[in-house]
Length: 181
Figure 1 (cartoon, rainbow, N blue to C red):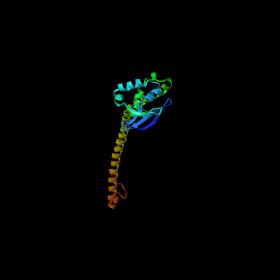
Figure 2: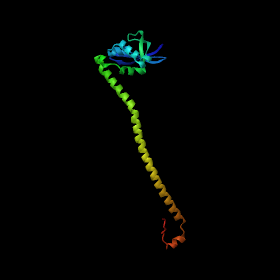
Figure 3: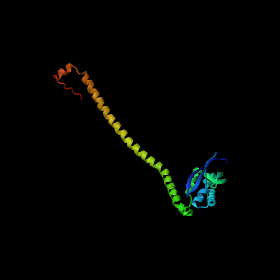
Figure 4: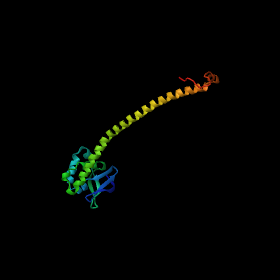
């Protein structure tokens, strides 16, 4: 695989973490991360290879190492780096990096919780709003039917008034007493 683009993704304990881009996508070498965290990169490589998901995506890519020389580096796709870091045993991480790794892992727990529970929360809130809106619709329908009946009655009375003649007025002894019921 030919490397197209190498850029610094982040810094962990002042170690540059590279993002390597080629025609197959974006990849991250694991060795610099392991060195920054003070964990054995070869042990991590074995853990990755034994993982059914990570092992099937890992590859070796030529990338520029920290010393500026091009080397073959064991990488995993960028999209999997966060899941791999989530599996790192913090008791094996350098003391000065433990807090950051634990913070990152806690964030992973929260992101996963939010992702999986947000759908249920959405459905619950949606149902509450649907129920509320149904009440509004039912009230509006009821009010509409009442208003329609009032309108119909008022139109009927108006029609009777319009059809009222002077003779009707005289029969009521010049009073506009008309029984609309």
